Picture (cartoon, rainbow, N blue to C red):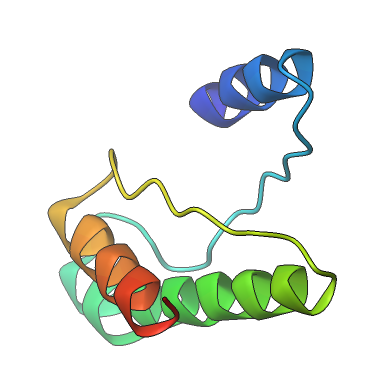
Amino acid sequence: ELCARVLGTHFHLKGFKSEARAIAFLDYSETRFKNRGLRSLVAALCDLTIRARDEGKSVAINATGGFKGEISYATVVALLLD
């Protein structure tokens, strides 16, 4: 949450709009993380990307930080949605 606030402030000062969103089940429970958390992450990334494109915006996914699984899935979403 702290990182999200700091990054939000940074991008706001650079003139970008940002939104922090908590993703359910991205936690240290391996079963929930694999079965529900990563699915929630992919759904949120797809939703945000498609919505932004529908509004005529360009989208960049910076797939860094977090757990390795999150980075991999975010990268796949970015590749699939071009």
